[in-house]
Length: 198
Image 1 (cartoon, rainbow, N blue to C red):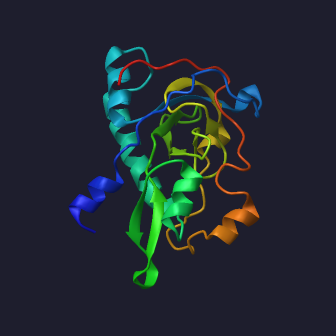
Image 2 (image 1 turned 60 degrees about the vertical axis):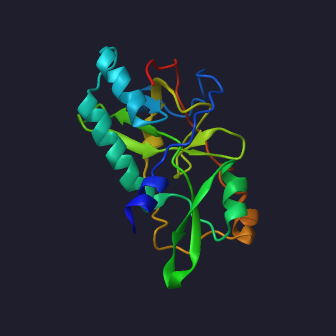
């Protein structure tokens, strides 16, 4: 993989702010974590520097790096560019798949960072746009109206998705059979507010 290709694939899609209101409740109160969504690392760093959040600049950098690793491991993959763009409402990028064929992945549209009460390590998930312009994790645990906000979230929102790196890319038949990206997700902040910075 060349450096320019890596740079292109790790760009963050422009934010479409649809509101930072509360989202669906799906878990008990004792299963909640403090969570923050950011469109890019710079927005997280700006919020950390203001000192109004319980995370540091180093936490932002670590979480973003981990989100990129998770993106490479579990991002949705498609066998057709047009199909990828339909499912994610925007630009997708090509990657060489097994046997030299091309596969297509949505750009990472931000990341979700949360701290579990049982340990001090932040949990991280990349976010992807869906066809409705919302933002979701690859596992299907969470769909958000915006990629910029903070509040309480179900711990299951940080559940890792199965790897797609070694799986066959989704075809139109697969998408039609499953309902496509975003068809069965629930979850979100139990209270949200727009984060500053960025």
